[in-house]
Length: 99
Image (cartoon, rainbow, N blue to C red; front, top):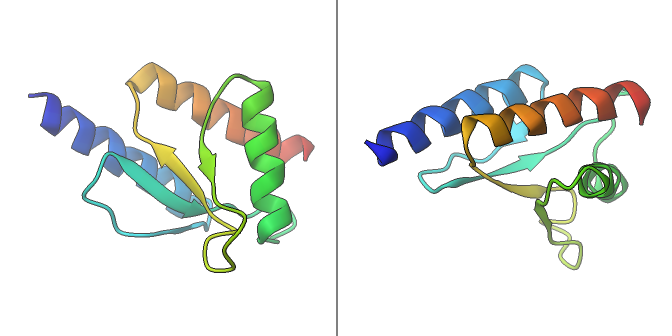
């Protein structure tokens, strides 16, 4: 079913982020709320903005909420198709190498 597929993709994506050492809020929804960490082990609003802008330059749209201290270092990533999530994963790997 579509719901099973979304759950599987979400869980795969969660595992990817957690393997990178990123904090991921538990989610039963079709998105993940993650705190990216750069290759130097830093996180925070500047890091979240850097990844957001990098993804945007590659036509991958995620959401960020910079106005609130509790959310400024996080990105909200919707769970897409497998090909969309693969594109996201490739972009994140590239960002980690180059940012």
